[in-house]
Each structure stands twice: as C-alpha cells, then as structure tokens.
Amino acid sequence: MKALPFLCCLIRPSAAMLRVTVWELAVLAGHLLLYPTGVSQEQAEAVRDAGRPPSARTKPGPKAATATATTATASTTRAGTHKGAHAGASAPRPDAWSRATADAGASAGTAGTAGTGRPVAETDSLPAPAMLPTEGRSHPPVLLLHGFIDNRSVFVLLRRSLRRHGWCHLEALNYSPLTCDIRKAAELLGRHVEDVCERTGHRRIDLVGHSLGGLIARYYVQRLGGDARIRTLVTLGTPHGGTRLAALLPAHPLVRQMRPDSDVIKELARPAPNCRTSFVCFWSDLDQMMVPTETAQINHADLRTRNIHVSGVGHLAFPVNGTVAAGIREALASTDPTNPAQSENPGGAADEVASDQASVA
Image (cartoon, one colour):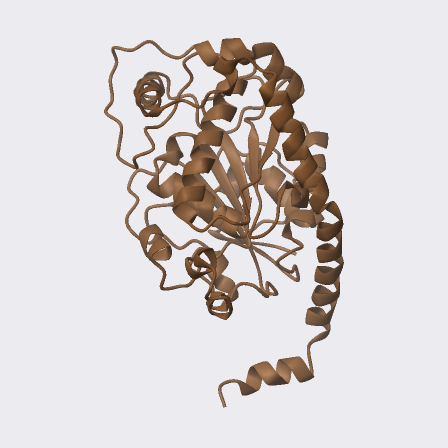
C-alpha cells in the first residue's frame, strides 16, 4: 500500500515532472558528449603543471600547513578584514597568472590549515603573510567540484557565466570515479585548495559543489578545518541529510556513505562551533535523486546557512540552469551570503525573500 502513490506517479506523472525528465535526459546526453572534454582539460593542466618550477607544484606538507595556519589566524585576528567577497579591478586569467607568479606564490607564506579539524592556537608574534597583487582587488578564486561519476565538464556553462561577470580565477577539480571514501576525497580537495591559494595569493576561496561534490566539500570544511580556507560553500542538489535513493546501489561504498544513517552523515550532524564558512544550498522540489527533496538543505545549529528553493529543476540540470547560475553569482558576490539584504550586487537575477528559507522561481 505504501508503494501505491509512487506507482500512481509512474502511471500518471505530472506535466512538470515530464518536462523535468525530458530536460534531464537532454542534459545527460550533453554530459556524455562533453565528458571527454573534462578528461582532456585535466591532462592539459597536468602538462602545464609539469612545466612549472617544483616549488609551484609541491603541495604543503603537514608541518608547513600547521605553520601557515597559525600565521593565518594571527593575521585574521589583527586585521579582521578578510571576510566577504573581494570586488574590484579585474585580474589576469588564472593560468597566465599562475605561470607569472608561481615562484612568488610559493615563497609568500600564504595561509593554510593543519587539516586536523582542531582549532589553531592564536599568536601575535608571527608576521602577516605577504599579499600578492590579486588579493583585495578581485573576486576570490572559485573552485568547482563535480558529482558522482562525472567530471569538470559539467560546469562548462557555469564557468562561462562566472567569467563573463568578472570572476577571473576559476578552477575545477576532477576526482576519480573509483573514489570509495568521502573522507579521502575531502583530503584530496584540501590539498588542491592549498595549491590554489598558494598560486593565486588568496587566503580564502569560494567553492561550488554539485551533488556528491558538495558533500565532499562540506566534510572538508566542517571536519578537516577547511573553514579557514573556504569563505563561501555553495552546494547544488547535495544530500546533506543523506538520500534514501542510495539504498538502490548498496554495492558502491561511496554511495553507502550517502545513506541517511551513514557514519559520514552522522559526523556532519555533530557540533561544529565557530565554523567560519557560509553555506548556500540550492535544492529543488523536483530533484529525483534527493529522497526526500528537503535532504538537500542544511539544518545545523552551528552553521551559517541559507537554503534556496529552486522550483522545477532536476538534479542534473543544476549546473546548467540560468536561474541557479544567477543565484550562485549573487551568493559569491555577497559580503554575507546567508543574508540576502547584504548582497554586493543589488538587483540580482534571483528573486529573494528576507528569511533563512529563500526561493527562486
């Protein structure tokens, strides 16, 4: 009897669900066509990275990360000026900037985290890190993280939208479809974030994660001390509370971690006092992968969160939807993404309501 409503939906689906399903199939076809592009982009970046000096390629080790994390805390305590978005004059393209300042970025001593999830002791004895020319004069870099069995090609339209509106530092990270642990993927993300900060000279960056990518990013921020590096985390159709649909593919360990009762979901529900990252979560009433659909929201007492309801958007369409892209730009341009009234870009394309639960049509 409990399955009867679901069978009725299959027999007599709503017009909205039919439209979303057709659009999802079109988006899926586009993803399949663009998938090789994402692989080739990764290979091209590997070739460019091989041509950089070793100092620009090496990821900071635990000792270096600890030292830079202490420096970052001291600098933030004295200055208190590195929250919010940086708006202003445009900067060079990220690849050209990386090649021009690789050595300078490696020796600048930019901030980091110890990656242990424990608070870093404050100190006033260390000098503030050197500020490279881009910090304070442009938007912080934006790192894009794809979902399960996908790659960076899913963000082709979103990257174009952000670049056209003034975001110069845009990067995307591919993680292997053979990844079996969200925790390990979060550690990989942390190393990449450190590399982006080192190359661009920004102490903090923004992060956009689609589906599983948002869950990996949240684990990094909330459990591995990534809140020292991530200013704003935007998630698109991410199963923050786990999705019951994961029970349909129990063999894959990564999918099992997306169950509502998984250890990872329980870890994310634990207290997270003094978390410095702002969370903006886009969720849809027609997201077929989120069961229930409200699981794509964050409801956590310790986190500064804004949940944005998008009507009539399927799971795969989040990264290519124009309204969602406008909402992402608005969140990344805001000094306080969790408060719509504080946007630096008034008159943005996304409709807002002055409450924790926002809605865009």
